[in-house]
Image (tube, rainbow, N blue to C red):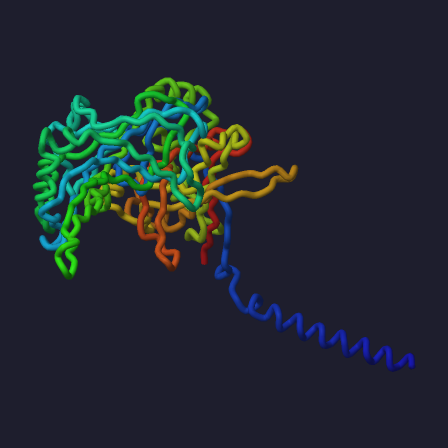
Amino acid sequence: MRWQFIFVFVISLVLYSCENDLTNIGANIQPAGDAITTGIHSFGVSSEIFDVEFIYSKPDSLLLGTFFDDTYGTLHADILTQLQPPVGDVDKVSYPATAIADSAKLLMVYYSWFGDDYSPLEVNVFKMDQGKTFKETELYPSNLRVEDYCSKSILLGAKVFSPKDYAGGSLNPYLIQVDLDTNLVFGQNKFQSELKATYTVGNEVVFHNKFNGLYITSKFGTASLLNVRNLYMRYYYHYTYIRKTVDGLNDSTVTVSHYQDYPANKEVRTINRVELPQKAAKLEQFNSDPIKNVVAAPANIYTRVTLPLKAVKDSLNKGVNGKKMLINRAIFRVDATDVQDTTLAVPLVSSILMLNEDSVDVYFKTRKLPTTYNSVLGNISYEYDSDNNLQYFYKFDMSKVLTHELAKNPTTPELKFRLIPVSIRYDGSKNIIEIKQQNLMRAVKICSGTHPTKPMKLQMVYSGF
């Protein structure tokens, strides 16, 4: 049996040697200078807080009210909106000859709010009476001057309520109705005449010139901020007709009550105006702590980041073993901080657009989507550290942006980007179809480029052949 063991051992040794030679045959044939070389490099960045004067207002939902937050200060939001008249064929929008105008109400629909459930809020509805109308094709800033559109001298209606006074919930909306003065809506003794007016596609401007729109604001309350989803004016009227009988002896008069809605829909302009009276003091406070930056919405504070493009280029040109390197992967990571101090009333920013500073204005004016060269989208992520604490962060894949900039602007020493909170709309296939500046209350404190333990970093993986 001893000789059989020796035989098996020798055969195994021969086979192992052959396999080892086959495994290394490529490396033995390839010249040393042709081997793929890889490298990893981290670059520090500089960052600073950036004051946002305004955002372009085209929101899916509207903030209304005033809310005070210890960290980010007071935010006051109100609404200026046009209303869409009934438009279509004359026979579809005309009213019965016996129609009589009754009343008008402003209806506001909301599903949620920030702040105290039962804190009183007074809403005032004014008529926009300065003769100016919004243009359909133009975007308007969130710091629009109210006095250019409304003198606040024609109060159509007011109502005091708390956000949870009425039945509603996550599936069923809350509905607030504000009675409007019918003598003031279209002008003295003109409410009835609107029953005879008809509008067709293309001549809505006739109505807008007659009725510029509504200015909706809050008079008191600093603990509630409604998230209004829809609003419209409801115009009530009634009419009569004769119900005839066969014999004609028992004919009767029938009264029918009905209404017509004038919505603030996508066919008209609705502006969410935002005021931050304590912004200057908050900016000074945030700037006093340079190891942290802030991203807050709406129209509040962003963060500017400067990437060292020249240092990246020098690192690539220097290479390894005399080889010029190419970017394989470039990840810019931003860590959130002080998350435990964030109140439920101001949720964390969920999506941040890292946008080239030179592109900011035209980007949102023209409703662009992220490209491969001037913008990168980052969504909030989380992980657990060694102590099992939850850590939030944002990641941005900068490889295409850097490759494009190095090819297009090889002598540019640095790149400036803004970190902008955004809202995203997807289609049924989860493709991005729209990105807008965030108009709801969202905020996050982030580690700056000088943070002692988790500074912003650009981590790059490169290779050369």
